[in-house]
Length: 168
Image 1: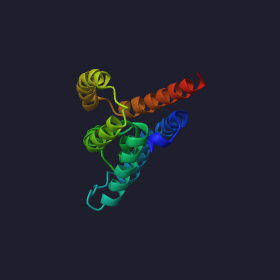
Image 2: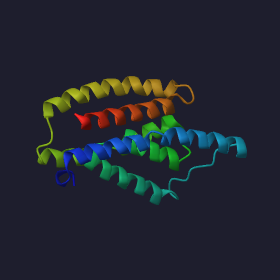
Image 3: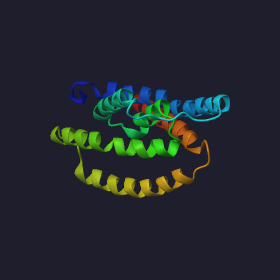
């Protein structure tokens, strides 16, 4: 699908998606706080009973990953945060695990189409591994609401930058 869609249209779609994803995680936190104060606790999450919802989230993430090059941070994370009672740190870890297979498949497809710069990708992989190690240790000890705020402002920042790159 990526090869059939105009590059500017893909960027515009990405920018709108990022803007739409920004409030999802903070809204989930607000909803959980309201539910906890009203019912006195969290509901138990039954992954087996929620399998169709989780498969739908995964299929949507896989499509978006292949089309826009986005994944866990921008799609699985907010959707998983909305459909599950997992705390934000567990949502992040689960999202990272879930995005391994589609990342490998999308990489193979884009490599065959000639859309991969292996040297640049290798340098980025080293940087993301180092950043991921630091970020994971921060996420585990982050104060309540910090991860949601970082996600919100990060998605808004990326959306704004993507929109601005379209005007050039």
